[in-house]
Length: 163
Image (cartoon, rainbow, N blue to C red; front, side):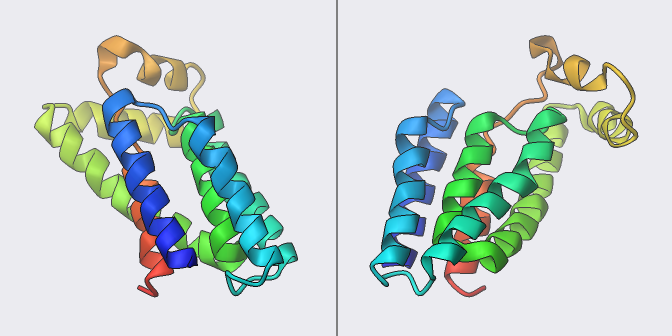
């Protein structure tokens, strides 16, 4: 059951994000509740405590990326919702897979947009925590943003599939 929910939610979240550049609360909040409910009724293989901890871990690993300007709030809530389905260890695995997949996607998009050097320089400045970099990277004229839900969904799907 959990596998079907993760895969379906990932496809839906990715499709919406690719079309609108948003991951709506109308998807993430019921998904998080479903993760906890599936644990409570014993249908996910997680305890209710593990589902809640997974949600908190998913939130915790993604929130700093959002604060630094690397992801949107919807991506944070999507990872938290997947955490309720995957548990704390599963969501950490999903996060690692998402980071790798997202990095590959970001490099591909930077190359396609002819912005590889600027993207790598901006990332280095962001990691070094230079003041004002996040705001300048988020400026619409810079053309750095791309939908991140597909990377989040793929990371969660790989864990759900046992890969």
